[in-house]
Image (cartoon, rainbow, N blue to C red; front, side, top):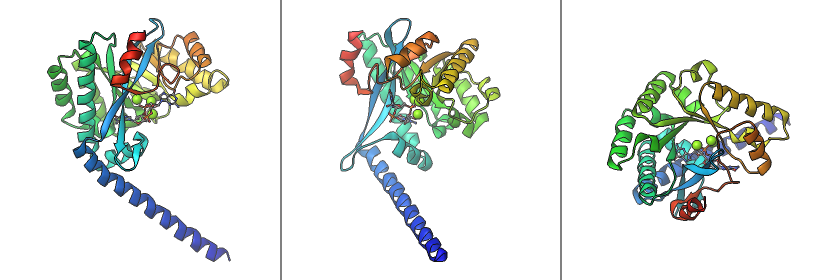
Length: 277
Ligand code: C2E
Ligand code: MG
Ligand code: MG
Ligand code: MG
């Protein structure tokens, strides 16, 4: 009895693996085509400066509109793009598109100060990154403080030594750097201390449970104190309620991002949001 059950479980497990592998291969093939056919676009989510009370920054988030399957969320295709190396051309496109948009906002006289772009692990250690970024800034006549790059702790920890060197080069260019999803990765404080970053993004899993949850409250408070003591700003992500915003305000959190202030939107729908402030 137990034996046959075991066999069934095993077969079921294999079938699942197959489906997963198939889905992954399908995404990989579709991704190649998507790059050629430009099925990607960026949406932008505002970041509110708590003290100034206005939007100072926007995070660019990648969207894939598949012609048959509809919108595919980044959490499903970015890992595949990363494994296959397709993240390199895709990431270059994201950087170029975000810089183009930043230049456009600037020319339109929008008060937005900078655009933030997520970097993946492969991109961070690629030898073409620094050249590509500096050429883009030059081409679009952007000063480096107009661009922020977000990396997660896990991204940096994949290859800690070369990541650190690359981050230093980006910093030397004058680009703002931030650590995304702070508190969820596997980096150590002793590694963090060497990272030349200007901001930490408090992960939304902590923000979600404040102000009710005592542990989340403590983590938010301690992170903000730690960052400020190191001269680093804190961006709270996933702020959805005024209760969360008020609590983060009482901790002097610098920037707030989340559905409370605005969902990620295509740039053309953003103009109205920006001029409202
Ligand atoms: P992330 O960089 O941590 O981005 C924040 C995610 O939280 C976004 O999900 C955003 O839409 C979502 N979010 C924003 N406000 C709220 C809120 O108030 N509540 C909740 N529950 N969620 C909120 P999204 O757009 O699905 O992106 C997921 C992840 O995919 C990003 O996490 C980032 O790691 C990755 N990603 C997105 N675009 C790019 C890209 O261009 N390049 C790379 N390498 N990764 C990207
Ligand atoms: Mg991010
Ligand atoms: Mg994040
Ligand atoms: Mg995230």
